[in-house]
Image (tube, rainbow, N blue to C red; front, side, top):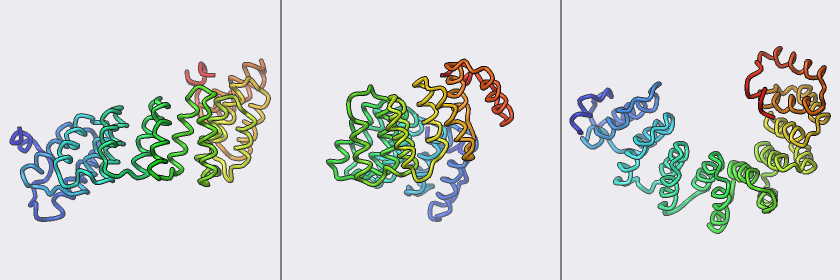
Length: 300
């Protein structure tokens, strides 16, 4: 198998003694415009043949290529090769593997890497929390927070945004969202635009618009996510007038609307039965270059 891979490998054959040899190989794999099943395995074969040096940069590029193309089998092959090397417990590479496995939906593999790390930093915890949160596994995401705090690892903005996303996806009443909000305030992250937008979205999804509006006004700067979360929250509550007023304010402040925005606005217009306003919003949408997609037509 090794000889077959080497025979078909398209990577440049160079001396293992030069730094450029394995750097060029790593960059070739990572920069490949289209996924090639043999590229990663070919590079591993060259490593085994002694043509390339097993370096941090090479493993990082291989993992990045597997993540980019969601190549789970190749990723597992790289992981197996890395596990037998002196870099097997490198925190940066382990964090990259966690991200790879989460991207591919292989959460058992991601958790195995995480559990096998001798020391976990904030990136380790956040990578797994974010992976769970992005893939509709909110309980698993929230379940990591106590261990993170026991390990004296302080969450960062990305951690809080992911935790709040998970809390917003859970059934209301558990109090997790409020506890995370309090922790974000304690750590000084509550006014960060990304954390604040996630916090706003969590309250809006639960219909707690007073808290959502309060968070919105406390944000030092606002982005499209925060405006959209507020508009969607009012639309879900059936408050058509406030939805349209907020949409108008969003436009006045120079934020462009997305299909998600228009979906919420048309939902509000339908509740109001405001045909003329609907025509105006439709014209506004067409003028901005967007089309009435199935998402806008059928999603409240």
